[in-house]
Image 1 (cartoon, rainbow, N blue to C red):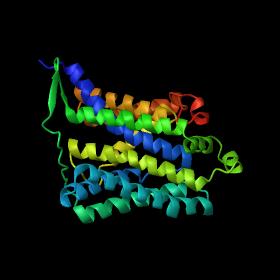
Image 2: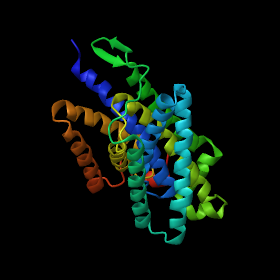
Image 3: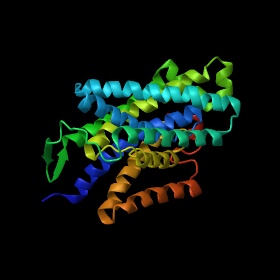
Image 4: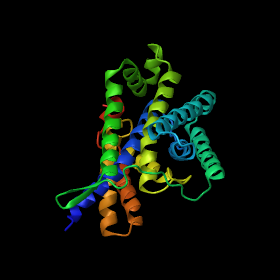
Length: 296
């Protein structure tokens, strides 16, 4: 007989894997650039459809298809940052205008995807679909193992980059004090573009995994983005590690709620937790340290 509690843990971890990748990238972009990158959701969908284009429509090897999807998605994100966000920051410095621009980009990219591939679901072939293992009273799909492993490695690699490389430390310095960072010669456009590229690269495996679990649709990024925002609030704005931990918590919570209640309550539960943190713990899990020790 299947152990439902342990099976629930596997489901929760596989959901959390997607949220961790999206939240880590979103937190990094927000921390370094001070931009609420709402179009992160659309780039998420774009990367999934590009993988579908290269892997199934063009017939390229899967690994090459994913790499090409990552390169093009990162290029799109960097162009958005340099050609849209940066000029708006320089002209007005009004964050609300940049959020409006990002929302506009979100709808523009989603509609473009709908025009090319339609609004119906596209299914990404999963070469590991049939691989399932039984560990005691729990069934674990190879896809779940890959999803969890990629999320952990991707998050760990991002944190290591920020802490162990010169460019990563420059990004942390700019996140902590932009004015002083400029004084010592850190180029805002460079660190912002790198943050955008890394944050987008983390989206690609998350989008591919989503395509394996369900289907690719133009609006597929909205759910993960909303969980990413909640994870950033729970973990502490400015903390990449906090965002990853918040995503893990929310993924497990979502699975637990779905097990006991109708599925739509899982989203409500996640955002109820976020509201609790906004009201009573506004600094998040990492407290007041999150702003001054971003990504630690």
